Length: 152
Image (cartoon, rainbow, N blue to C red; front, side, top):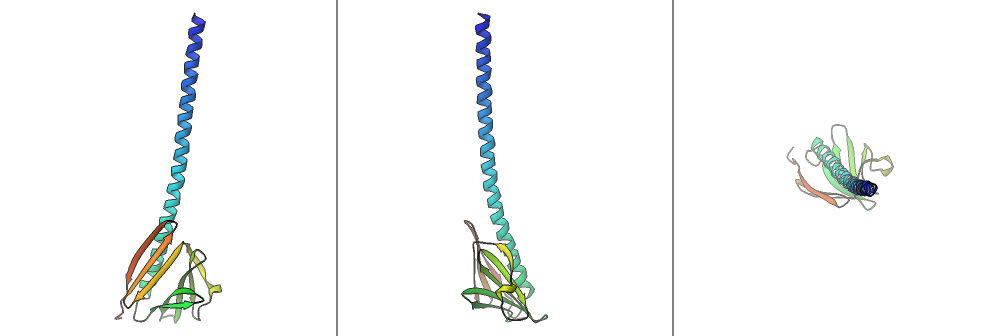
């Protein structure tokens, strides 16, 4: 009789060990999936913050009368930011999944451009003293406005 009781206790402990192991494995797997989704979401927001800050600083650093304009070259909508002190132009545009910058004292040349940050989309309009822009990365998008000081 004691042999049977001892073996039932072992089976009972084995059952609890297997159940505990399965629950622990389930928790670890779901935590990993959750972390990966949060990491992807954080990367999306980080890329949008980088692009937004870059646009804000670029526009505000050269914000004066007629310094900001929009051009279309080779089907690319380009934000032109003229720096009158250095007699140069910064061209900001979206192509091939990236926000690009071309800083030159000559005309626009895509081969001189550098990648700023990965995005899914970028669009903007300029209406006298207001730039309205839209940034997209993955399934997240951000729209904003930049007010120009046209009187300077």
